[in-house]
Length: 479
Ligand code: ADP
Ligand code: MG
Image (cartoon, rainbow, N blue to C red):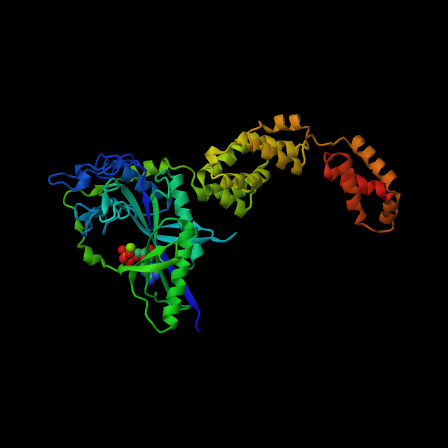
C-alpha cells in the first residue's frame, strides 16, 4: 500500500455586510418574511437595470488589501448562465476573467508555533441566488427570493492545504479576518459564511494533482473537518480498490456523516460566461486603494505579533486571543486596568471566562463579567489579597452577578492571611500538637511537610497564604 497525500482547496462565500443588495436598493437584513425583500431588479423583471453598490466594492478591496493582493484597476462583471427556479434572471451576475481581487496570501497556524502560508487565487464579487424550500408544503417547493442579489465575496484558495485540520485553520483565519474588517458578520447558521471544499488525493511525492470532488455548502467548521476527512478516506478506498475518483459535486450529510454525489462537475464553458452588457467595468484608482488601506484596523496577524513581542505572550495564547476581535478587545480593555498582568489575564480569559461563556452560549460582548471586573480580580491575586483558589470562588460569584471582586471579598471575608506574625503563631500551634510528625520530618521524611501545610491551612480556615505557609514551615521545622 502506498502512502497518500490529501490536497484541499477552499471556496468561501462571505456575505458582505452592506445594508442593501449588490445591484438594487432592496434590504439584505436576515429573517424577513419570505419574498418581502426582493425588488423588480432582484426578480429580473423586463426593463430593469442593475446599479452597482459602491460599498460592496469598497469591502472587497478592504479584503484584498488585507491579504496583500493585487487589486485590479479594471474589473468586469460577467453573466454566469444556468437555469434554476431560485434564479429568476436565468443568470447570476458574477466575475470571471477580471475579478476585483487577484493573487494574495494568508498565514495559518494549524498547530502551536507552526506557520504556513496559504495562497489565495482570487476573490470576486457576485450576487447570491434565492432559496428553494422543499419542506414547507407537502407536494410543492417554495421559493424565497429575499436572498437574491445579496452581495457575496467568493474567496478562492490555491490547493495548498494538506489535511482537514489545515483546511479548518484556513477557514477560521478567513472568518476571523472578514470579521476584523467588518465586511461580513460571519454568521454561519444564517448562511453568511459558507465553504465549498475541493478534495483530492495523490501518492506522496507525486507532483500532479489527483481528480477532485467538490463538497458544497458546508456551514460549520466541525462539519468542514468531518466532510473532508470522510472524503479523503472515500477516495483512498476507491483508488486502492482500483476504482476511479470522478470529478463531481458532492453534498455533506451531517446526520449520516458522509458525502453523497449531487451532480457531475460542470465546466466553466457550460455556463457561457460573457461580460454583462448592463454593467460598466469597475474602475479603481490608486487613490481609492490607498484610502482604503489607510483606514484598515490592526489585523489579527499584526495584533498577534504585537502580543508576542510587547506583551510577552506565548505564540499559542496570542493566536487564541486575537482569533476574534471581541476577545482581543476584552483583553486590551482589561489590560488597561491591570497593567503588566498580560499573562494572568490571558490565562483567565482563555480558561475560566471562555469556558463559562461557552457553557452559557454567550458572546464575549454578553459576558456578565466586564474586562474591568476581571482586571480587579487579577490585581487582588497579584497583591496577595486572595489566593488562586479563592479567586475561583470570587470569579464564580461575579459570574452569578454578586458584584465586583472587592465587594465579594469583603462580604465573604475571603481575605488571605499574609501577616507573618499570625501565620507563625498558627505554625507554632500545629508543631506543638504534632511532636511525632516533627520527629519524622527531622529524620528525613520530607513528605510530612504536606501534612503540616494541610494542618496550618485548616487552622486558618483556608485563608493563610499557601506560599508563605510553605516557606515558613520549612524554616521552623529545620530548627
Ligand atoms: P471551479 O470549482 O469553478 O471549477 P477552480 O477550478 O478554479 O474552480 O477550482 C476551485 C477550487 O478547487 C480552488 O480552491 C482550487 O484550489 C481547488 N482545486 C483545484 N484542483 C484541485 C485538486 N486537484 N485538488 C484539490 N483542490 C483543487
Ligand atoms: Mg467551484
